Length: 257
Image (cartoon, rainbow, N blue to C red):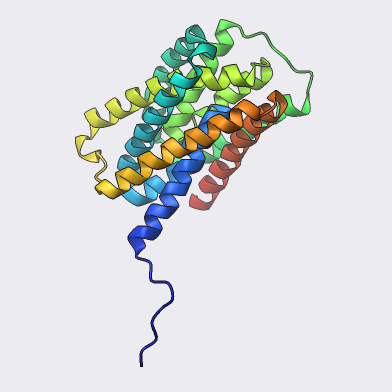
């Protein structure tokens, strides 16, 4: 008599479950800290559909989450600063794409990862370090956000440095990041579709449902958490997520060398 396995789960179900939890966690972090979606979900989405399609899929999800969160936090958004960040980010994205064409990606990942860790460690260790949110700092942060996003998939930490050093209110920062990431997602998706129309991700309807549902649940849970999270804890979460992104990117680059 043949034994019947107690748990017979198809690979598709396992994949949907893992991707669902990753997207849910990313959407939750996006609502609480203003960033973190790509850091958590991108590795799983890229693994599922490939590099180019994965980037588009990540930005499609970011488009949906940022657009939804934007409606919830619209009263706290600094629109002027969001647009001031977005304009140089587009320039940085194009520059990063050109750099990727002539430079080793692992080397770029190591360089960007180390830069993130050092940039965030200085204001954390030197707690009195504070600068005024002048326009040149905003423009510089936006540029490096686009540059680091297109070279190493790490757009958020450059903005975290600006938030930490200027003592930007975490709730206002999280709100302002939503129109920024929404516009950046539209720009990135458009760029990829122009350069490679075949990179559009093709998923089954159930997988699209899983991803969309995970985004909604993550935002709902994140909304509940954000309303009850003290400002100091929100700032600590923001720094932690950014540092984690820097460390993970550095390790990824070193292992690929």
